[in-house]
Length: 258
Image: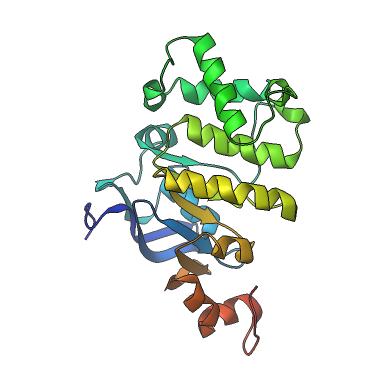
């Protein structure tokens, strides 16, 4: 089935991607229901980034489909997919370095989806909304952090800026590519409640992550990839016990993932 059923918001169906003779994804199928948090994990080179790129339109699948609310979006452009309600962050943060942090949100606030923000009629209003969003994700207005050039901000703030740009798009589904990578334990601890609050507000989250301990406190389900193949789909406790998953991470006979 590829339509909208049983509350499914996103379904990946028999998805494959080849780059020349290299199989990056091989017949991957899974789904996520509205309001869930899905973790996507796997060793380096397992196909996680290719999967994200196929879902968000940066790469066209070789075979299979991606269905968002029942519509096959495989082959759609990234901006069309974003305007439909799927936002993403990047593992390597990509701000407009010379612009103040809040102006990095102006472009998404001009999207069709962002017109639903109260009072978003003019550029000045959008600037105020951008600062409100940044304050909501932890930018200190009193310290004028939203006004600092994005290129001058430390990594913790840049990760929050990426999240803020998704929020500015009013995304129904947010795909977070290693949002915890490079952050300290304290920075991660401050991000977790924000992600929980976004999810409670109705945002479906797909988290590609290597920080398994932190991921498993959030994700209700995980998908495990290895060499482009789906090894496992289920809850995190079962993933930790699965022999194929442990072997993919640590080799045969090894124990312990987090």
